[in-house]
Length: 262
Length: 262
Image (cartoon, rainbow over all chains, first blue to last red):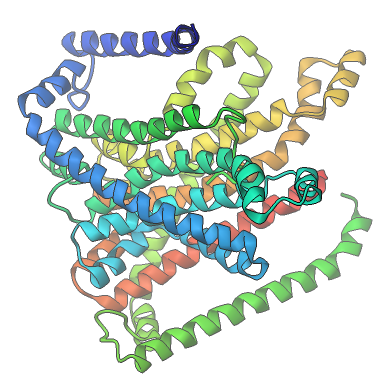
């Protein structure tokens, strides 16, 4: 019953955009066949043919990028969550931690990539480091805001009921922090993909970013479009993964938004 | 704000500004000192981290190159930001005046919003080639959405009582806009600006990176590849300085206007 309801709601929310998408794709196909589009806009069929023709092109490149983005994301998540918790628990740490996060976030990644390349080398570690740098801020902000979201009166109530620190954590702090944490985790996932791909532009032999660059300089529009579609799919599935986990895990206060959107 | 307010405010604001500038100068001084100490103390070879002295020399020696490339990047960012501000303002006003239009086109806008820069840049290059127009287009696209979202939030969030009062007075739709909604939306424009301006700089540099045309991003990439470490650092420091100043200036603007609202 509940499952059917969810299905129905998902359908109700998604049929309109899906129809738009299908119509757009069909229109592009027809327009390209009729010769209405310039040469650098391939028909969706051509892009699909490119994907079917050489499936290894996709598996090898997407796998690389996804792995690097995920590794960077994981590192950034663990550091950002620990740092944010420390910043909330220990007052004097708040300023330095938050300012460092903001500063790192507002420095263009391009400026850091060549420096990092000379320090740690130009392999996967560079892409991982950049993915971590681009995704850290959203998670930092999410954790900080989440840990501060606990209601002061509820805190006092638990204090009056002589709750232990662990109980305070279990029944108040974690439940009120999780929605914000997930808001941060969701936003950070596409940023990690973006970071990994841009870092691949700086010189990687595999990965969606490398594939994009090769296709651009070989002037191969279908392949460029394929890499763009793959980029969007990777970013969207990163977001979707955490949105799905959030929907299952957080039933009490879904859809929190961050005040300081990165 | 009347002249009286300004005359009261100015000395205090001036003192605050002076103090803040002194603080920034102090921080920069300490950072440079630490940089020098680390490099000499740990005997770091200049190809990993050059000392501040040689970097400053490289900066002065290459002032012309750095200047023209920075000007190119800033021009692209400024032009793109101007276009996106105009577009976002127009569209936000149209959306808030016509609900049907908003409902029909918002899903499309939201779908485009989540497209990462890494996907926009190669397509822009296919369409527009390798000149400044690619950078401009990328900047316009990446800075458009934060501006639009914040402006719409502002236009929609106007005080209900004020809006009803205007309704009772029989104000026209335009008068509603002029006297209630636009004043309410202004602070949000600045919030959007803060987010959009940093992503504008980043977008300009990213598209230079992928197109390989002129600009600060390309200078960083080139000097990194040519192992001209001092020039690389000079360019990196320049770009970080620009990014952070843009961030500070827009944050200050935001704070001032949000303060005015409160």
